[in-house]
Length: 261
Image (tube, rainbow, N blue to C red):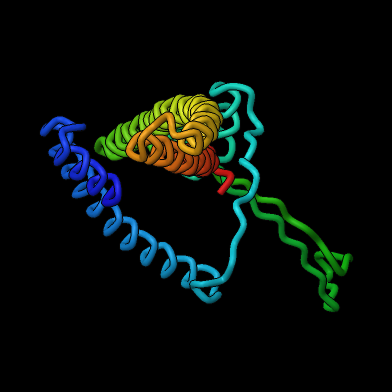
């Protein structure tokens, strides 16, 4: 961008470029300087995170892997798997089952309480009243509280409320998962289409740069036009890397949302 600005300044000085072109080149150079500073900061942060996660040196050479394929054909398939694997849904479902069992236990508290006992006795002292050395006995006892002052009614109402809250929490977890997964699915599809588009743009930019190099060698274009073609090709390459990053992040976000990671 700085080289482009210098060329525009020279062209403007001899009247080959408008004054507005000089201003646009200066703005572009300033913007590029800010982007360069931001990229340097981002690289430092990324290297520090890489070293922390992998315990490797920040300057360890890495290779860009192939795009992560998704195992689902649609957002509905991903959502169906999320209902079984997503931690928030599983936790809410467990709370709902626990509250349901507690409510059932409170409802059964209205039944009578029945206890049973079995006793077997063996003795060496055989008396005249009993000529056997052992005997057994079974006892069954039942209790039924008909009125407890409304305690069981209050406990049953409380259990029913907890069951309802747990059921609503499970439904909310499913709705949150559906919203997140459908949004991330759309984001992934957008990133895939954007990557395909910028890949085509890169091919066109490379061809444009090749033609510009031929025209520059033939002397049919000025250096400023050649630099524009070179900058266009660099911008297209940068766009490919950006959209590839967006695609990878969208895939990872989907895996996390489903519960795979």
